[in-house]
Image 1 (cartoon, chains in turn purple, green):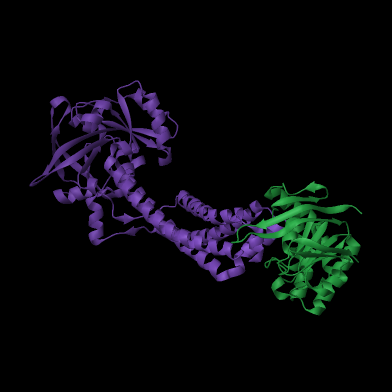
Image 2 (cartoon, one colour):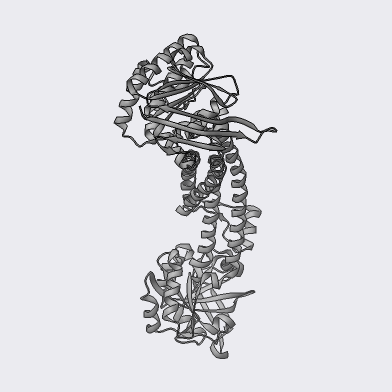
Amino acid sequence: MAWRNLWRNKKRTLITAASLYFAVVFAIIMRSMQLGTYDIMIDGAVKSYSGYIQVQDSLYFEEKSFDDLMVYDSTLDSIISTVPNVISALPRLETFSLASTGKKTKGVIVQGIRPESDDLMTGMSRHLQAGEFINSDDRSILVSNRLASYLRVSVGDTVVLISQGYQGATAADQFPIKGIVKIPSPLLDNKLIVMPLALAQEFTNAYDLVTSVAVNIQEKQNMESVWGDVSEKLKDTHLQVLRWTDMDKALKQQIESDDASGVIMLAILYMVIFFGILGTIIMMTSERLREFGVMAAVGMHRSRMAIMMFLETVFIGLLGLIAGSITAIPIIAYYLDHPIRLGGDMAEAYEIYGVEPVMAFSADPMIFVNQFITVLVLMLITLIYPVLKLAKLNIINALRG
Amino acid sequence: MSKVIEINKLNKIYTETAVPVHAVNDLSLSFEQGEFAAIVGPSGCGKTTLLNLIGGLDKPTDGKIWIDGTDITTFSIGQLTDLRLWNIGFVFQAYNLIPVLTARENVEFIMELQHKSKAERRARAEELLVAVGLADRMDVRPSRMSGGQQQRVAVARALASKPKFILADEPTANLDSSSTETLLNIMEELNGKEGTTFIFSTHDSRVMKKARRIITLEDGKVLTDNII
């Protein structure tokens, strides 16, 4: 009966469902674009560089002093590697340095890594622009793409690095370039030099020492559980376990504020839609008060009438939701494979914030689930009116029409 | 014959109006199983109010109504709803069928509320619709029926739950002579066949002619009560 009631006034039902449909399509695509872009931002800054979780000496995190390094040995490696959902532990030695090539000099980040295992997480080798990827025994380096352009160097050229080594030692050496690699984060692409960990330790006189151990995890969704497990295992040490949100607060806040503005925009959209639906529900209720009176007179409980109204509103909601989802899915599927690459001023604006100028999409099922929940909640709120009307229904007055 | 309805010193005073209206005034009555009774009287004499009170659609200001020996004046809204579902059939002046349901579904509707099986509902609905002469209109919606046909469906619906009595408020007011005659014959036949008590409120002399008991009201009181 609820289904038939919907079609008493086809135009009204279709207009109401259509307003929901457009809201759902817009909301799903917008959220997909937002979350996809956040993924790109996080991948660019986190997955391809810091990792989702790092272990650092607690003093190093506070002071960022090259003297507060930590020992990385097989014990620490096995503690981290045996935590569920951890793929591997990636020791790193990172310092700042001056890079010079002839007339050009620039402040850079020098990162010592275990190339083979690190590449499994960062996928850096896939972004090679020229030359070859380094291996653990190499005595050569990778230079990020924009830095190479700035320094006007290419594969085979030599870069001189001058830095401070461990405990005040001077670190200075020259390194041949084995490859030019494009780093997804424009900020890092401007200043990153990567070399094998052993070579970085030799360069900085920090043998067996590292600045951090990045934890390569199975899925980013595992981050909190892995962080908890590793923290538990290292709680009695001087080491500190950090999530990317602890390490890169600026990025976290940038995402949070953008996310909040998106949510507010959707809330306004849904508010407008809500009043449209409420209008329909009020009309559906008012024009049937006499019928409700008859139903009550012949023995139908008001609770059953409320359930009928609930089903009618749910049907309208489902119409909009299902049609909206069916429309949005192929659009998202297309843009998942074909992210929108920005150009011009927009791209520059993105790069200023260190973000790859790409609008990507996300297929996170929660986007759809959230729309379903939102629409369902809106529908439930609109039901308050008919439920109150039914509760106060005066059968005699209703029968009089 | 057992008493189906017993009313004792019933009063209904409407206080919402500027001057309180005493619609039912210290009225006492009773109805027995199988009666075919008409309540008559001028407009405003309290016929509809009395039917509404007997049907549990309205609460009396004072007095008692017993249905099958149970006082319903103390019932809650939910209890009154169940009382109507299981004991009372209604026929309204304006038919009041559910527009989105067919004739058969309208009749089945009450039995569905009673959680009767689909087979039982279907059989009873078809039996009643055949009895009211609508065998060929079972799957038609009310909007495609004449007033007389709709009122016959309403009678079938009222009888569907096998109620103890049927309250019919001016059931022929909107019908032409032919439809009125047909409807009254059907109700008379069903009254005989099913043994259901029928209580009408009416102005219609044709209904009065068919009635076996005529109660005349005036100013909310019983003026005459004649068994014919």
